[in-house]
Amino acid sequence: MKKILVPTDMTNRSKAAIKFAIQLAKGLHAEVTFLHVNKHGYETEWTEPEQRATIKMRKEHLQEQLENLVLEEYELQNIIPISYQTTIFYHFGIVNSIVEYAKAHGCDYICATTHASDGWERLLGSDIDNLVREASVPVFCVPYNYEPQPITRVLYASDMEDYENELATITNLAQAKNAKIESVHFTEDEQQVPLTNRELQHLNLNIVKKDSTLALAEQIANTVADRRPSLVVMFTKRDRSLYEMLFKVSLTRKLMFGLHAPLLICYKT
Image (cartoon, rainbow, N blue to C red):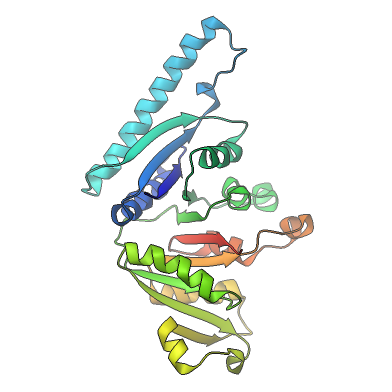
């Protein structure tokens, strides 16, 4: 059984990841953990005895809030909750808590809501930027305004460097949801793609010439807006230098905040 971890701060904007995870788990028969990171429910071996009771009460209150939030969303989607749990956890910061929990509990995916970011947060990286960078498993980035819908069409944006292995990963997910896969590759020279017509047809691959007047992220976003997939999948490189993180915005990051569809980010092997 697959395990999906869904961090939430329990605000309205973070509900998007909860909505999507419930929809995703429905076909995967996955176990979903809804996680709220809060240091007020955290105690250590050095916590004073009189503080433990207060911490326990806070944690129980947060747990009740989270449980009600999750059950409300299941009810709104008319889905019977089968395999899920809610938990309050903290381990030295928000992102670190999520990453550590995912590792310790063998989670296969993390599903988080993207929030618009600006100013220093945009420069130094928002929580979801850091989460995608630090996580050892694929991350679903769900737009904050996402509304539940069946996952029927998956758009795989490929650079064609390792498409066979990447497509195998996507196929497993798509088959579980009975979703169709459409692949798209943007290139400056359409003749350079070393595939036969039969292979192109098998991959359901569309070769699109890059538009020199548009940034690639904008062209991909336009394609997503035009084709309206239920999910977009991209594979990216993990090893970005400090210079790149501070002064260059990756294609994946642009899309993370610019798409109107959930984006699954996987790291290249």
